[in-house]
Image 1: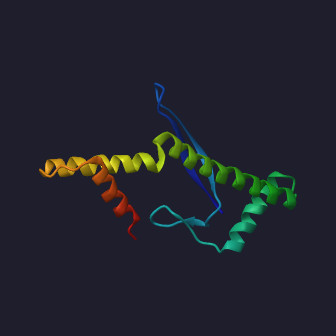
Image 2: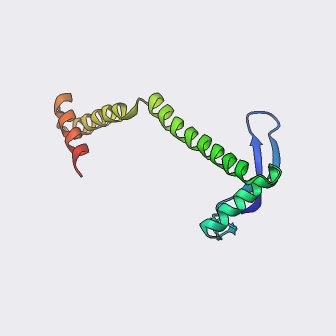
Image 3: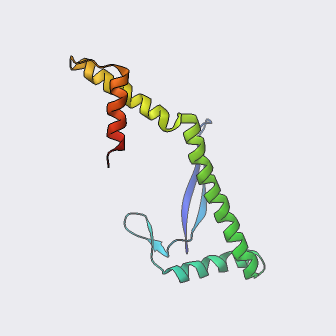
Length: 131
């Protein structure tokens, strides 16, 4: 675990607002030359995270572990919900398939060999089912 300085920026106001803060990085002990967290084994990193939260919770390690799991559950749930939200708002795979069919038809038309939507759908679906 280590600390690094990051900046929060609010760009949708004038003037742009900025504030630095100390980010806690739990998945390493330092940054490598590419700016990625590195170092420490899993046991050391987990122990450091538990200690970090226990210090904030009057030294109670049980509460610290529960806090870590609570935050992990929340973050994981946000990721799952984001994926669902993206699928719902983008039309999901069906919309991508329809777009591929239209592009296939346009490409064939530009090549002087137009095809029906039914033919294009069969070809696109066949391409998608290949491994």
